[in-house]
Length: 208
Image 1 (cartoon, one colour):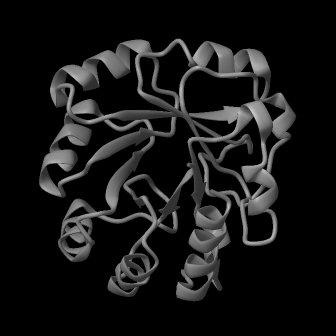
Image 2 (cartoon, helix red, strand yellow; image 1 turned 30 degrees about the vertical axis):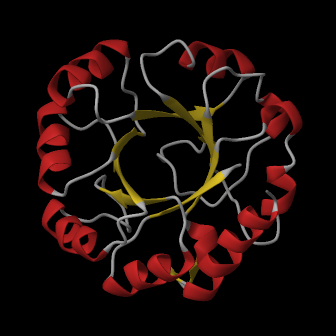
């Protein structure tokens, strides 16, 4: 069954909304941008989070030691690398974190070959997102999902998912995602919307 991740939580109200709706994952963004939180803010929010929901930390080209420190301080359950992190970076981070923290490597999709190359990286999951020049995720724009090749590695699907197009994305045939990742599609006027989060989780659960 496909899971669901609600990304970009910043406020206690956001935590209350996800605790009520029950997604599988939530995301705290530690990279520059409108959804950025500090590790201190994330720690306070994580204390309120239901134990049944896993917390993902989103980083963009961050120093591996800083990532490891943040993982321990919050604490985080998974790490999402959403920049240009290469194999050497991932291996360095793994040596700092150990094997207990799964890694998600994001791909800003341009081609099938690019996704296939990323699948060879030493991470547990891929995350397929829309390529927007100069922007590392959170664009609210979709990409051509026909570019997704058959993958053996489980992947998170991001990029412009909303309550209106989510059901279609879940019917991806051989490219069905392990999990859908939604940020702007769970917002109204730039803030997380509890009703939209409820609707999104319900669509995923009903899709089986």
